[in-house]
Length: 193
Ligand SMILES: [Zn+2]
Image (cartoon, rainbow, N blue to C red; front, side, top):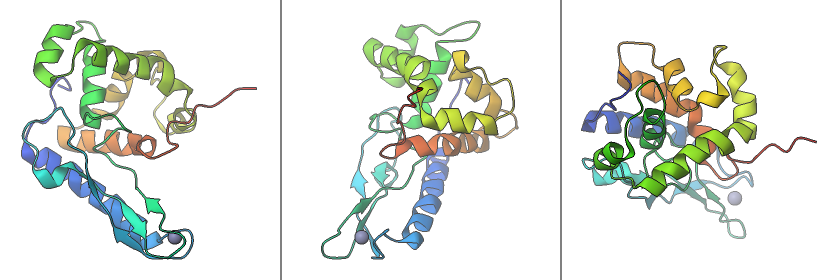
């Protein structure tokens, strides 16, 4: 059941390894100015899981080594959803658990994930109103199987990705799909003219 996150250290280690892969290819690409990228990771301390190793809380990031540029490059992440202090998986899961045939109570979710009523309400607004308007969603939804209902986000997304016997892998695929929204500009809203 997708109502349970694989709640163990190896799941977070797995997500961290995906982030490392994304980061190493960003590093190989280098800075747009032609400079080399040096590691400049920073701590994020996401909420939503108590058993995270310290190293798994670092947002992988780089800094250009050229004088006059020194641009920071932060690649997409499968662990962090934008500036939200919760893990991306938790933001998806808790909002999805409020939907569906037997929605979980806010009180229960608060106890399970440590997110208060207002935080959970904001996530619901994010999925219902903000996310469907993003350029990312308008482009990316075409890559999904038909039938991922925009008005049932994020539950419909979870259902679309939850298809194997291996919840770790399914979550990995879902979070990788969402990772473009974790970088600056990733949540730009499409303005229709
Ligand atoms: Zn540069």
